[in-house]
Image 1 (cartoon, one colour):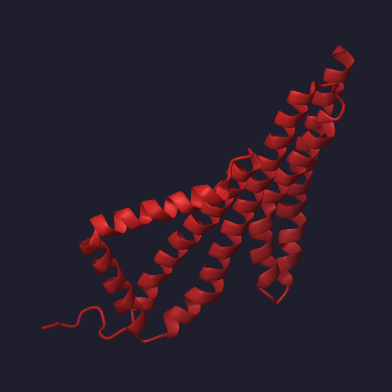
Image 2 (cartoon, helix red, strand yellow; image 1 turned 120 degrees about the vertical axis):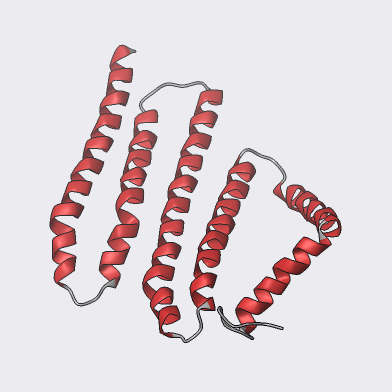
Length: 194
């Protein structure tokens, strides 16, 4: 009925408003409170959690709202899949933020104290690599949610990777050589190599 749809949209609007209220409380109350504490971890956690948590509130609101509608089995299945995908996206967003914050606030100061400049060049690579890994896992979870056989897909990617490795031996050799230089640190940037 029209009433059911109205109730559905009211719940969605309510979830958005709760998210807005949480964001205001976070910006104006929690942030000021955490700034007074000596520990920097709570500020980092708030930065990482703030936006994904608002997204989680909206997804939860969508879950509650969809229950008010009398949908067909197919539509219930589609809405369930959409909800799971949204949860995976929110979790991915949170994890990427957490890893980036950890690298920035904990690993970056340690790298800055070392004599070698190679650590500073390794950090951006770690950031990009961690993003790729987290997004890849999220994509595999989404594909698995749609009922596709993830094992065969990963096996196919493995065979594709082997074919790529054979076709691009020089490039991969250079890449592994670069990783060896970054990890072993046999020389510094600015040194002349013969």
